[in-house]
Length: 214
Ligand SMILES: [Zn+2]
Image (cartoon, rainbow, N blue to C red):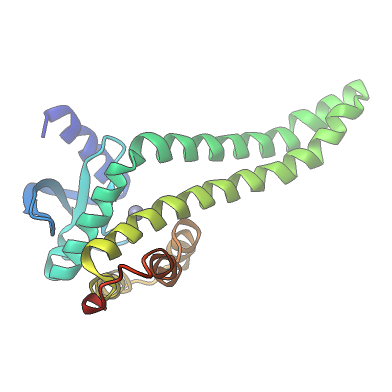
């Protein structure tokens, strides 16, 4: 891993309030060698992530469960294939920034201009901005659901639903030591329940489904 990417990854790890541990090479379920960055934190909120520079970070607790490690590797590698860091991150940041900008303008600039210039257009722009702003957030959530659904779909395809469901259960046990409703809300807004992904998988693979994997 080049030093610049490692430095940026360490900044990312600090940003999520965790500590860098080491760079490790692991074997993916498909047999390839994969470099990952291992981190630790006292209160695990994030177990794995693909960073903005395309590196994969994995919480050291993930290594206690073989199926969880397999799942996070396939899931994060799928994000890398989606060019997730270069497509989803900038796009979602843009949508969220635009949304905050619209709300700020609707509460400050638009009313002032509307009142001082008696400009009806700015008065009309206030409710429009307040309607469009949450729609942009909903669209960002929809995009996130799409990327996550895609990554979990591929995880089911490679590992089978039993391993993925078990891995998610292991993951939940690791992060539920300190339940935090805000973190759970972010989870609901950013990724679909596994059942939805699995239903889609069944629908699209009706003829090719491998019953041995169930
Ligand atoms: Zn993901």
